[in-house]
Length: 54
Image (cartoon, rainbow, N blue to C red; front, top):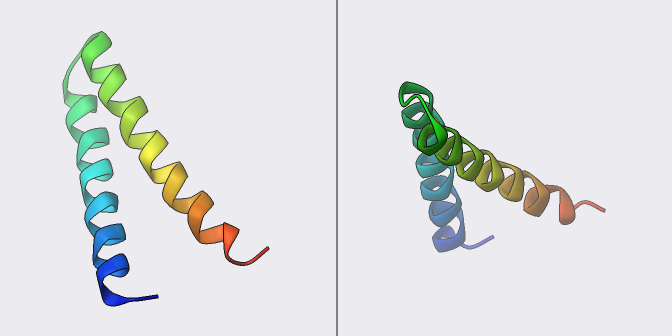
Protein backbone atom coordinates (compact mmCIF):
# COMPACT_ATOMS: atom_id res chain seq x y z
CA UNK A 1 0.00 0.00 0.00
CA UNK A 2 1.36 3.39 -0.88
CA UNK A 3 1.83 6.07 1.74
CA UNK A 4 -0.80 8.28 0.14
CA UNK A 5 -3.48 5.58 0.45
CA UNK A 6 -2.45 4.89 4.02
CA UNK A 7 -2.71 8.52 5.08
CA UNK A 8 -6.01 8.90 3.22
CA UNK A 9 -7.43 5.94 5.14
CA UNK A 10 -6.16 7.40 8.42
CA UNK A 11 -7.81 10.73 7.59
CA UNK A 12 -11.11 9.02 6.70
CA UNK A 13 -10.96 7.04 9.95
CA UNK A 14 -10.44 10.19 12.02
CA UNK A 15 -13.23 12.07 10.25
CA UNK A 16 -15.67 9.18 10.66
CA UNK A 17 -14.76 8.77 14.32
CA UNK A 18 -15.27 12.49 14.92
CA UNK A 19 -18.65 12.33 13.17
CA UNK A 20 -19.75 9.61 15.57
CA UNK A 21 -18.56 11.53 18.63
CA UNK A 22 -20.06 14.82 17.43
CA UNK A 23 -23.32 13.11 16.48
CA UNK A 24 -23.60 11.63 19.96
CA UNK A 25 -23.59 15.12 21.46
CA UNK A 26 -26.46 16.28 19.22
CA UNK A 27 -29.89 15.05 20.19
CA UNK A 28 -32.28 14.48 17.33
CA UNK A 29 -32.28 13.27 13.78
CA UNK A 30 -29.23 15.32 12.76
CA UNK A 31 -27.10 13.68 15.44
CA UNK A 32 -28.40 10.27 14.43
CA UNK A 33 -27.65 10.98 10.77
CA UNK A 34 -24.09 12.03 11.62
CA UNK A 35 -23.57 8.83 13.60
CA UNK A 36 -24.92 6.68 10.77
CA UNK A 37 -22.67 8.38 8.23
CA UNK A 38 -19.67 7.91 10.53
CA UNK A 39 -20.55 4.27 11.11
CA UNK A 40 -20.96 3.67 7.38
CA UNK A 41 -17.53 5.18 6.81
CA UNK A 42 -15.90 2.96 9.43
CA UNK A 43 -17.63 -0.12 8.07
CA UNK A 44 -16.50 0.71 4.54
CA UNK A 45 -12.90 1.00 5.76
CA UNK A 46 -13.21 -2.36 7.49
CA UNK A 47 -14.76 -3.95 4.38
CA UNK A 48 -11.97 -2.55 2.19
CA UNK A 49 -9.31 -3.90 4.57
CA UNK A 50 -10.86 -7.38 4.70
CA UNK A 51 -11.40 -7.48 0.94
CA UNK A 52 -7.64 -7.76 0.41
CA UNK A 53 -7.44 -10.95 2.50
CA UNK A 54 -10.18 -13.03 0.91
